Image (cartoon, rainbow, N blue to C red):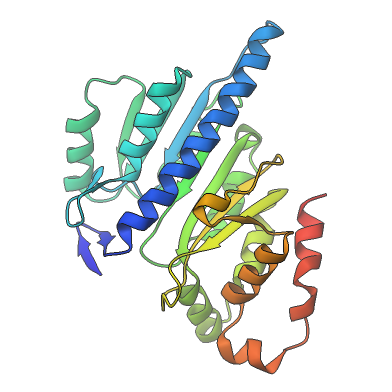
Length: 266
């Protein structure tokens, strides 16, 4: 994997961005239908918010595909939904590139800084409870504690959280530093429904998408995301939560993973 200005880019990037494109496309379509229902009842629609905690520069130049900010911007503009877009990156060279791309769109705000600080500042600006996506795609292990904190704020009640991470990296820090497992980390966030999927077969880093929602939604099977309560979803959770040695040894509790999916879906 090549790291360009803090952004990891590899042969898997194109596949990852294709999955992200499909997720955003379906999510925006779902919210568009909700907006129509609001309009039919003469209710005020609070808009759509997209927050990218690790936005990068907007392009994956090494592999020739759009970055997450461009993917979202293309989808949301085509939808006609009112929106706000908050893009965060700690590298000045990346935020400068984002400024050039989105300088003509007053609905896009760009922040140079640590997303752990900036996210809390953005929370203070959300005077309504919009629909939307909060997206994390760090190079290392996600700050699940931060994600848990912001997702439990009332302003984020209707904002779904999408996390891309290396399950292998999470398992390594769990073993070395006694941190929470993938299962425990997702459970702590408190979303009522989870969709999960892993990258290419044989990927040693087990690149994983976890999509936490507060409403029911069809499985994203065309992208390889499955409900955590399904047979396939439970199998994926087992794979990303335990090392191969742990799975082989059938440690106590493995067979109870489905209890997690039942508990978070009530």
